[in-house]
Length: 464
Image (tube, rainbow, N blue to C red):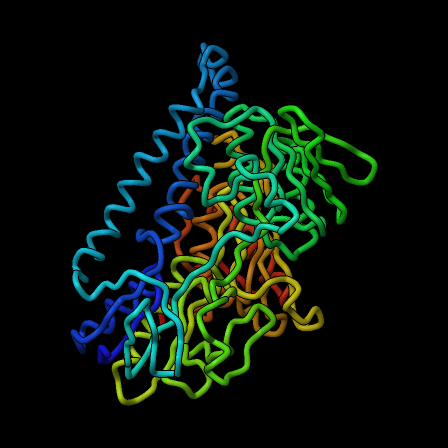
């Protein structure tokens, strides 16, 4: 039996972040990983998708060339075969940077599937490993309904789409969350005919009905967005798949399944731990310490099934790793929630969602990007930003948006919210001209004016 101070199950972003923290205190740690190394982000998630999006956006830009006096845009073509090869080339570069850490772990890296025998005891193949502390970071996998598995190679997910040598002309995307919108729009801009299916009418994780309405209208101008709770897929024969919903029908070549991801918690012996789990089988844990119940087990990364984002997984891994190797358990203050969908315009949600706020205590400031100066210059004057603030004080609480350069606006707002700024205090910070951020200033002014009497003065603080 192998004895270690800490065993980490899973070599994704959460597990690797835990390892970096643990190795500061003890070298007696092992990393157990079942399957390929390279992290979900680098291999099949954040990075390859952003490469594909960049190629698609670069090609799409040709549509404004003529209005700018640039001729020849109509003669440009794109090879999806070459584009996908480029995606894989850069993907491999990102994966290689992760693999350097795996190589550093060396013989402490154990290949195989870990199974809990007891809270401190694991089995990996024929080997048993006793660990004083364990980090559970087993990640997630795409959700695929059982009834669709018979589609075989005609069913793609974010795990398989980048491995295709080419993509067909007709694609149905099932799901309009982050993955569905990002890949759906990119594929449409690369010349595929894309129909994207959702259920609720909400897209990109938006909860604000005003922002969602603008997002559906804006993205619906490029994607055929359909909302139905009864979508059926069958194979009538030949090369086509048949999608039916609400009396309508469509023939496509492949299905891209983007229904979210499922935590990898099945078959690893969690039932032997004696702790309560949620509906997805994830053991209940403390978000400030990452401890599972009162056990010597800590959890991190996409396996939580909460915010499957790299920066969250990294924070969780660091917290779990710290508490594994320090005698005093510490609670950590989590960062302001921040989520960006890299469609064009970007969708961003920051801090508290619209539906999480008390309408009686909240005011909303907003700006439309139609007519916003920098947006006009960029030929991107589409979108809506809504900023939420505490009615009594003007303290910033959250925001939802579909906006040009929304990834940057979301960051600025997350920093302001985490620092506890009010709308007035945020307006006292620098705003350059002409920039997209001037749209944020307009929304902050609107919020400030709604939170009480206009006491803005010059928006320049007095030198006390």
